[in-house]
Image (tube, rainbow, N blue to C red; front, side):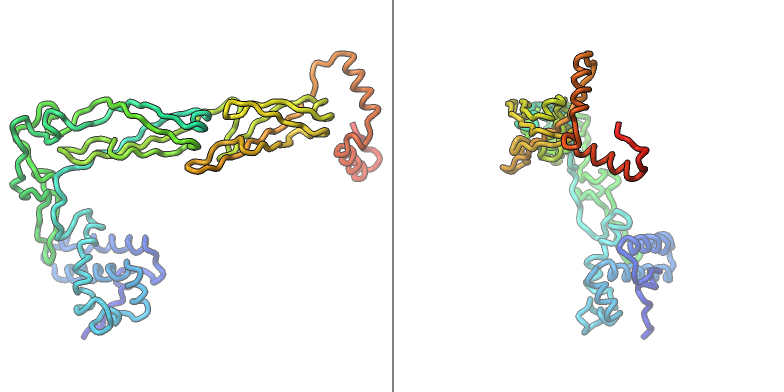
Length: 380
């Protein structure tokens, strides 16, 4: 018996090749040695069988592992493999059609797929406010969509007539054609895969079984949706051709920018300016919350600009849960502007009375600068 060529050598790849590289190599060689491109050449037919057998083994993770360990012996009789013929047993035959499906987009030796075509999926973009995302809402939308033709009930045939079974494919939608040692199935050229022919098309839909109309739908938007959330409405897409199943409608949500809040997941953030006096001495102020109420925020004495104050449970609800995010208020200390003469005098007096204890961070910084440059450096 002749020694079989290594499967990796047959496909002209390294043993470390990944799935994508393996598939690419097989495609290239299959197109080169396919019997349709080399009619009447037994050598090409044999070569095509070899690369098909090699790909069948190596594309399967378990089979590849067995081959890497035991070689061709893993698939010979008595070795728990695929049976006789060194890989061309029932195991290979059962998935041989998958190779041609993967390579050429057509089935080999499979039954018909029927004539009714599924309708297309549709996309609808909807913008909502942050408040609507917080509370949830029910919205009505109007979309132009292909719906089942009422005049022919989706058959595509004129009233009083019916579609006929395609005489070319016998209603299977596909026709078989012998190609050397195997048989291929292709879409029927007469009915284009539908399995039926219409002699008298419906005048309302011109034989398509569907017409274009505006449809109004009610959409439930749950609490806590985020920007980019997708909602699927099954069967609300376009109607199928000649009575085929309808596609789905996908609603993509986007959130409009809010004038006060910025969202980060379930948390909300806002910036609130406070006076220098309030930041220094402490105080409190009210801020609005997303639920349209108010809450008091206490500012401790000596608060620095940029400090964040957390308000628990005042953020956004988490989608499909009972959890709620928090609200964060960022304090921004506002420097006084347009001062009067008296105000400037008071601030100057305050500056004279100030010491390192009232501004420890500034005092520490300029001390560090002074130590670095020597006595020439001075605080402003």
